[in-house]
Length: 336
Image: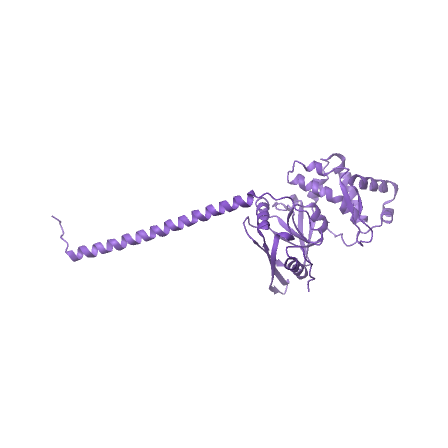
């Protein structure tokens, strides 16, 4: 016999409350199970997508000399003195400099006399009197140094006296000179031995104006495109959008550039970004450095965003090229 007898109405109310409570518990349980299932499915799909993006093998990209080339600069180390390159953004322009550490890494003597400090001093002297020849000589050394930096086992094979070198000329009237690295080194060694330093410029026809800067060793865009790891070219972009950001008295107008990648571009960028977080990507258009942006996240994205661009002409030129070039093959529209 129950100690406290309950009426039928009280029993019915208690039963109803119990059913409501059980229903709520079941509903909450279903929501939690559904959420967990959704998260597991999302994670599984993401893992599958990662495997697809990573499993695709892409051939190395050649530079687009008359188009758009995006290169990596391997400058992600926290200590700026231990990076190969550094990005300098000043006076609304962007330039890439080879650091002293990068220079010493290249001319360390690892490849016998060819990469010795003496050879580095010789090339530095050539850069002062004939930058076209000097930067042409630098290209194979940059490729060699970067390959060593990236621990490429074939790095040593990239540098030899027989390495082909092509020396172009600013005015375009004189055909490019096709020669070898060893021949150029011998040529300027002989010139250095036979002539006083003041006479070398007259002998080789110096053309150093336009490429020198007061501080650091600035590397021109066309040399970067031929020497640095190529992440993307114009063919991997679908479209671009340019937005003007609110300016200020101190910095003036600034721009935000959005670039949209195709499937190949997404895959190439994802593979690169996994090992190159916090490194810059430099945009080279028709041999000129336009801007640079740092890889901040490792994501499968089809959209890039570069903010706080101060060079309006460069931003518009890049936007017009991507939009008017049908994947980088069209005409560059002049920025207005």
